[in-house]
Length: 224
View (cartoon, rainbow, N blue to C red):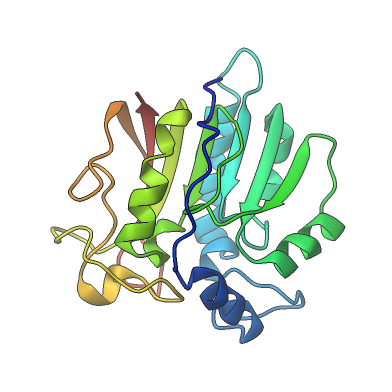
């Protein structure tokens, strides 16, 4: 397991925490019986089931279970299905009330929840980091801050909602509910301005969700 740099990041005036609190308070991603709902991408079987299948295959491919850090765990409807395949699962989100709710709702010996701003705070140690439809909601400055921390992990599994076909990557947005799809853009960590350096990359999954524009791509990176 690689060691995370323990130096504290300087605070930056990003409004992401307030924006995400508003998303849940106003149920901008939809609602169900829970007070928190992380959107169709975390609940529609046509999106969730194929993702869980490839993640379970990856996690069970190791001789010994690995540790996983889920950055932007949301309502944990997806993550709860993966915990049992890991040595330790650390689930992180920026919304404090959501983390409090998750702690009350989900309990496993190897599960831990933390409330962190992943662009500002130090990240937990782990072998593998999951970023599932998280970066698509963040500004380029925040993504760049996160990318600088990714070499602390051996594996990064990134899921992003992208336009179909060719597009100009990494057009900037203000962090919040929306994504770059409205700008005919999407996040590509290997492209400028992020330029993530990786040893290997492997395409894991493509999903064309019915009734939604674009394609949801999941890629595995082995990081330097």
